[in-house]
Image (tube, rainbow, N blue to C red):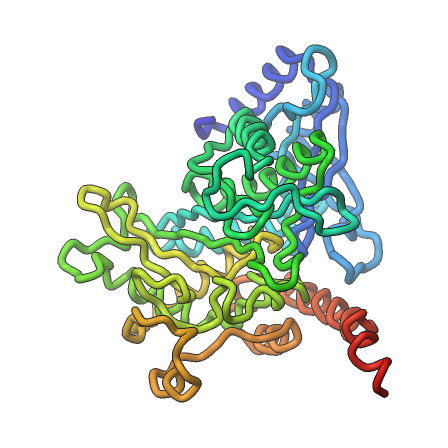
Length: 447
């Protein structure tokens, strides 16, 4: 939908709601941990909601670290109005809109992840840049939510009959496109019963909304087919986990600020400083891009997940990969950051990646030499000699690095920074005090 004036957008929504006999409108927003929250209003309330927003209890945004109940206002963004294709369409249709969360006085609530991303995009805009992203979200289909029995034994790009989920993917793609989310690719991933659907590259705010929609649609379509879809980063021991590689670039107007025709890698100084910023600050943003205890079961050597702080063109073991340039495709010049996983909060993840890259640009960071050899096959001594460091190995390590990070504090703002850290400490405490099956099997017979 083209960007319209506010009044025009509101009129468009009211007209669409009437034409499609919309009875219920779900107002969507996201909590600090990236969980989709929602409440429904009826069509009769729509005009008032578009004008003044709708009140709700804001403590639902704080994740596990609840504070006292606080009144907030959900202000719908009319440009995000979409019919929900899986709800009845002929009579009493259901639509959704994403909301910005405001305080009762009308000023933005600083604990709203969508607001945080808007602030970071404003910082980029003040420097003359628009931030574009293209995340690749992987996920698994299982028979149900109580176990990890897969639907197929297919592998990377496999075709039927091994890949029983072709219909699931097809229905998911069609539903995403009905909701105005263009899709580029869909295919079977490396692990059995693992899949990927790639949305077309767009600006970061639209994409963060699309990631939230995508995760819901994938799960919804799976449920309709009587199976379960999960974005858990590492559900099965011994096989690849699910990542969310994020392709990204900065544009100045219509020109790709990452492209330089005279460079060996076709990368501008801006792109190289952005890479350097991401590499330098990657350990301290990892708590946001890989935010669950389980995320660190994926970030181990040997399963295609990046662990080492390096960049290259061909190598898929590096944290940052530069896809090969094809003549005439200057606008496709981009970098791919490979450590995030699909269970992150996309608003916060895009915010901290952008902040790290802009830090590199503003301070003129120089990237280290690219590493085209396989970093996994190097010895510890070889990596040390090349100055190749690693990402944090556990959520606790990641929390400690993030807690000291000025870059993350500035990117998230005080409210979300403190609440996010508190949430993660609660999660780590829950995890660390568990007695696991592994410990019982390993220690009970011998101690």
